[in-house]
Length: 250
Ligand SMILES: [Zn+2]
Image 1 (cartoon, helix red, strand yellow):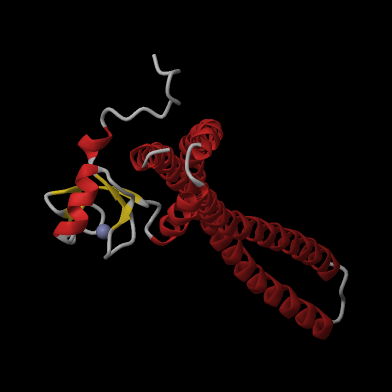
Image 2 (cartoon, rainbow, N blue to C red):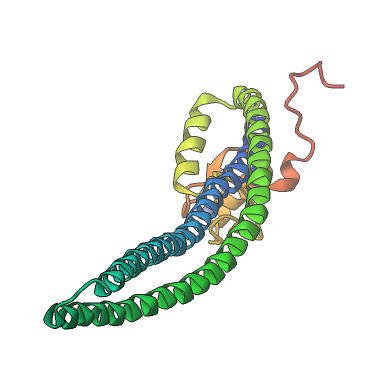
């Protein structure tokens, strides 16, 4: 393999790796958004259930107060019928006072029932709004979630397909340069092979010494940028390079 062929093979590999890199970066966003969606819905649901719990408590309170009131009223009724049978004035006065006290207490229970009813109305209104809000978000976000899951499946398929292409492209790269390529790619955001232009590396935008630049222009060797260690090449020099072995090219 000539240096230009090795460079061409590296460029091909870099193209594929760049695609995989971008796809993987996009793919990383999907679980993030899915988590956001789940957290948002869980938050709305929690708000709703706070209201629903308060509503259930208020309804329970109202039922208890109502049954208290009923029991107290029956008690008063019994006492009142007993009053007719009492002959002693002192006993009569005493029971009358009891009845009066119980009636006053009932007014308090009636107030409590009214307060609970008002609370129930308010909680029904606010939980109704929260339920509506939750349902609306649930509908929107679950369709977004479905889309994301489909997108994820498509991305996985694309990454797998690119991975198969990468396997082939990798075979065409000299193992020594492949190692260099992999090492630089890790350190340089996935880009290890980069063109030069006007005596500058297009990766780090630093100047390339003239002697080195001339070698790269003529494609006489494989060189790395002295500043960022990326493998550098000159676009036009690779234009007519074929990776097919001699004789099999069309
Ligand atoms: Zn550079």
